[in-house]
Image (cartoon, rainbow over all chains, first blue to last red; front, top):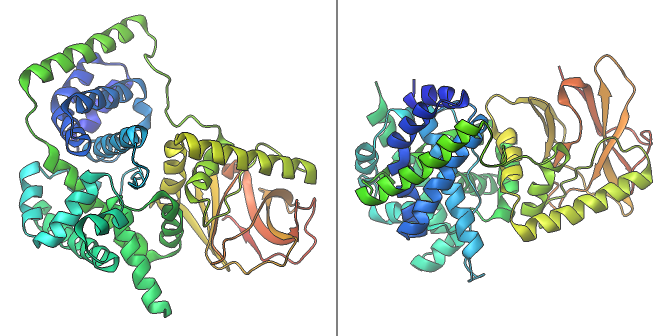
Length: 177
Length: 261
């Protein structure tokens, strides 16, 4: 079982030590997502505090599945909220949030680590990898990706779909027991 | 564009949705497609897992001074909160009242969708119309304030959830998750002027239909509707074509009648 899930059960019982353990285990991930999306360490720090305060004040928002997948989605969505709030360039389109509840493959994510995902990502052709990374961490829509990379919209769509499928396949191989 | 090429285009949009790069106004359309298509749902689950895994690549060491400062600040608040026995912030960021579940989606998808939600029991035409105006106003306010994310996420999550119960009907799918029920339609016929679709619900063990919300699909026949009822008490849902403002009882042959069992 995801160790985060056990800790969250204790956090729901207001166990401060469990919360501290959660923070120690996952704050790098949350801070890193904030930094990649917001591009500013101070804002990433604020984001990290916001996310972990949510964990403490509203632990019932986590309804099972993989904690690491859930907290990653919360962090990304909050970072996008910050981008929207500070957006002074209306021509930049902000994408939708990711739905928060677990998917069928959340358990796969629990068995992954950063290096394995980086290795899997490195297997993708650069044009697919670049779009996927820019899309996930850039806080922009596929239309904006097309504009920024001067690539036809249809090509962007096809590359993202192909890239995600290849990435999923590579992660599946990595994550196999 | 052929049906096959349209379907392929929608599957590409599923990948964009999984990665989280769709603009808000397109998310509801793709969610409706996923809700109505088994292959799309499988693809979404697969690709979203890959997209979520990308977050792992951000897991980097944090500057130790920054990390210590942040932890000290955070733990001080948590310890104080634990000691006082009260929450440091309002519980449940998604604490919208039940009838607003769909209005967040409406704000997101106003261009292509008619999403209708109303408060409590609405039985008269006047109340229906007033509630719809209120819902529309709320949708605009929510869009302007960009605070609809949590409610929208809940609706979309429900539509796509593997544990949701799905009932096929002629224009699409009726989706039930926990105490919530939705229509995700993609094949509704165009309506003559002055007419709307109206939802009906009957309690378990009863055949008496109570009036629910009215709605209008977009030009592609797509509509997502969150019904303002407790799904655990509903035995049957139906849809009929009615005059604008809705009716107290069906006046036309229902488009479908679907027991939820």
